[in-house]
Amino acid sequence: MNSNSICQRFHLVPSVIKVSSHQPSLAVLGSLTIDDIALNGRKKNGPGGAAWYVSITSASLGAHVEVISRIGMDYPQRNLAWLKGNSLAVRNVRREPGRTFHFELNYEGGFRTMRLLQRGAVLSHGDFNGYWDGVHIGPVFGEVPISLVRDCKRCANVISMDLQGFVRESDSAGMIFLRPAALEGVLRFVDLLKATSEELLVQTGASGLASAISRILRHGPRWLVVTVGRKGAILAEKGGRTLKIPAYPETSLNDPTGAGDALVGGWLSTFAATGDSLWAMCIGTAVASLLVRRSGLARFRWSDVELLRRAVWVRERIRPYA
Image 1: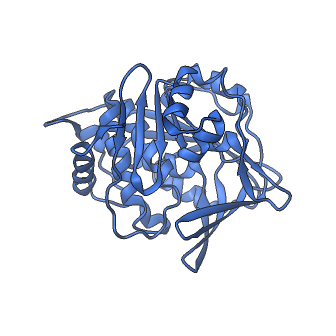
Image 2: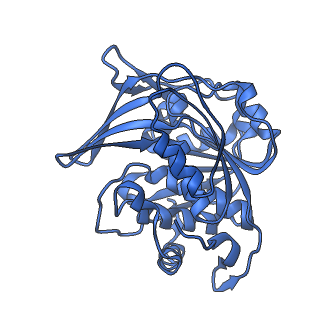
């Protein structure tokens, strides 16, 4: 992991690099998981979950990060030791009797399917206590009660949230499918909502992305990020612009797992440090492109120079979303 801080040293706006000395404090709320991944005929087992990817990405960019999660007795201690050894706070990761959320992810032909192998514990209002510059709410499968969203807003200046864990359900075989969640009453407490295009369409019931974006923004989030795979993402601001954010053309695709989480981690840590939502999106997009190149813990190693080069590349190619 980089010991130097992008957030501390650089803040890029269209043609100027400014120094930013603020290292934000962040909390990431959600399950640390165990993932079995099958990709191009290769199988591996390792740590996963938004709490894993968002927290490590944010810390790699210089944020002070606290992980808030519940794990079972089967969760490898070495994963917690690695987080702690890389300056992430894990005092609010509670190990308790029972099992950890365990998923099977299969990538084939550009598509991903997921199967729930084991449910884990549900978080509660007593799991977090403090105040941070930013909080990310990143459930994987309903472990964050909707009522906690309002509480999180009382604990942070900025709230980002991933739609995925609220809209996932499983059939009798554990296969994951999507269904809408009753989030209308809490989205106004969220600053940035992240969703895939499929999740957004299911949640809103809209027939197209433009209509789905409009419907979500009416319920309250200030910004909406919609990921559209290798095409990049869409950044929409309530009462403002809707922009097409290109994906950096990374040719070495080793493992796409966690790319969307890395994008959010990059956005939250950068926005909390700079207040610049568009540049935060550029950093998040650049980080996501770097993550997919490798597998294992090596995924979180990159050079600051390369990160900034990719972020500038993205910034120069942003266009209005038609």
